Image (tube, rainbow, N blue to C red; front, side):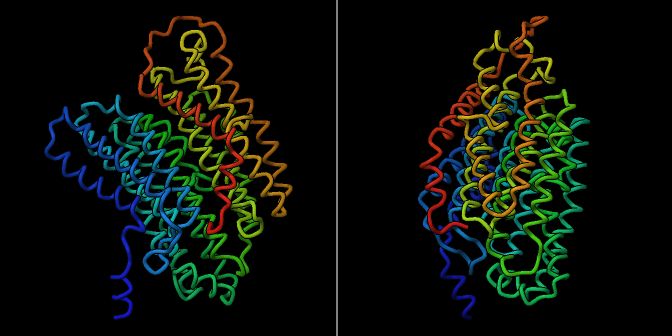
Length: 473
């Protein structure tokens, strides 16, 4: 009776951004069954309204816990909400032209919202059962989105995505079961109290299995195998979404585990994450060196970026700089990476780096946006990723992983090679005229993302102070 009363006393408005997105997805599914094909865009407009309202709700929401601590509303959740919902708005804008009057246009918008909802739930989960449910919610719609085109490349991408996701999902559920046995519960608060007394081997096995699933969603080593094929084989807006926004939820979940659950447990979490961070950034960079397809290049770039993002996660309970470093870097990465994909969406016929030859003369605005975003991903001032990397390096030093910061610095310098391989042709004279007309909505989105990346970098001081306020993590 006490549990039932407590559940009835919960306020669903604590999850208002998530409720808005879920309601919009359900209503969009119903509307899509009745609207004529020429009016399916209304479902996309509804989705955009839900995302915009969710951003406002996320900014105004007070810090609290919901449903017995199963969902945590704090600074980590708030930043992830704004980043994921804002990024979903960008993906919706990129989808307008490619999906116009498509027979399954409304289905696309519904699937996109459900996948974003799963990422939101990952970011706020305070219980292993909710974390597992969020993993499934973020994954299943993503599999369908990857194969949305129903062509050979999309079908292959969806199949690989599903097989890897299903296997690592089973490992993750195994980890949840092991940690439940070791910590005598699934709530993060219960686990924090119970894991220090659990057998070390049992706790370590559970953590490693759980980590496998979350690294799949983040696209980091060793769960990165799906990234290049899915990014190359899916439609450009879907590639932009899958390469960016689920990572935000997964990395927020990883940070929360390190900050809330594992302190006190005899599990080498920090060392394991540091090694995986170094492996992700190094492997991603090495693979990107040889890519000519711009989507595969961006795919391996995202794998390397996950390595840098894992640096503050590794020192979640060892450095006071970890939270602000991770949250700022997540927002900066999302804006900059989506900007780079927006340029790809604006020029759908240019598939390889050599196809961008002469872009600075033909489309100077898009060339500038591409330059800002690629140099931003590299970590060039005054872009936002530069400040995010600087904070991540500082957190690694402060947390006792100076060697990891050195590895990251070397990888940052090395990544200059493949970003310039894409940028350099843009300033060379074109050999032949490329008869393409940029997609207007994607072009405007690319300009806006590039500008926001610079603005966020220039206003980093106040933003970092906001992200470090009490109540986070």
